[in-house]
Image 1 (tube, rainbow over the protein chains, first blue to last red):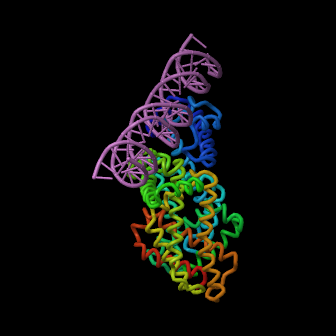
Image 2 (cartoon, helix red, strand yellow):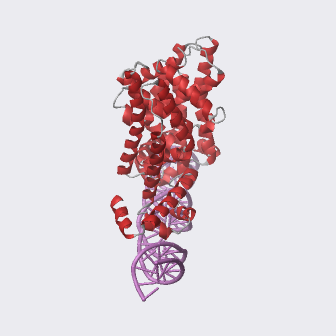
Image 3 (cartoon, rainbow over the protein chains, first blue to last red):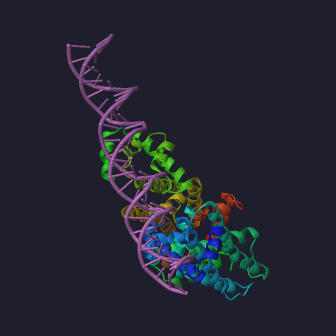
Length: 206
Length: 206
DNA sequence: TCAAATTGAGCGAGCGTTCAGTCAACTTAA
DNA sequence: TTAAGTTGACTGAACGCTCGCTCAATTTGA
């Protein structure tokens, strides 16, 4: 896929490619979150994007390519937003801030998260590997914050706990995306966030 | 579907139906786990189950019915195992036992859980509603245990917290199924379980 | 004028589903 | 005892249809 796109890039109009790609991704996310990847037809995607199937296939090789593009754009956006977090390493206050930002991203991109995690399996093997790597990167962000808190003496944690708790933090955030159908009836994002922060910090021994 | 099965039940040999249903579910889970619901053909399912497509369609009406059967069997087993828990209502010790049992089920039925949560969207609307109901039932089990602990004075929780924590307990268990690719490298089920119990009880204020 | 971009009818592989037919096991009745 | 009749689980070729993908024809715009 990479190769092909490079080749295309050198032939076709660069900005047009970018424009079309955006249209395709937007259309893809919209439809995948409504009906899932497999129930969405290429014809529908093209229509939603505002052009014909023929044109669609000028910009992707296969339908799976589009799913990959969608996943990739999600990670880019998540990474963007998370890298804007004001870093106060080594303090539980910094940890709280990170959690709030993370929960914020998940709230903003609810649909995208659901699509990504639910359709991940439909990706070809190599693309799947890429997604798992990205997932671990997210765990690593929290892990290094926890390490900071430990070194600063703010939290007493074994290495074993640090790793597990980092996963727990990531998962408890995803909970907001996947269980909104139930949680949304009881809590606002703010309530949910503060309750979880309270719970998690207490659980870690603060 | 319900109607149909009742009718069939009275005509066909009861135990044979049960046997075939088991074969189908096993085959379904195996293949869905490998390739996902949509990539698995009915022919493959029949072959894996050890009979022909024709026979397959003697026991289900549609391919979706099979997905429904898979989900349903999971909930039955979870319910079975959780109802066998020696009830010591109102004690955190009882809560710990419940968590251990729940984690045990998830470990046993890893593949089934992953399939269920990943393919849920492919269910027809009414079946989806049923699955969500069952999901809430699972939350309710933990919720009532927590209520017991509160009434016995073993945990101090607001109603708001009780509901959220019940969800958290359910989700943290699922974590073991969905993140085994990462967690399995670091922990055994026992280690994971005890660490999570410790974390969760501390977070709830014990 | 002509290359780039776009179109959508068309292709055909592959899918879920059906159903006419088979056969082993069982029942009936002479 | 046994031949004829009945049952229903089982089979797999066949059917109708969907949908990813192609490409000859057309439009666009420089």
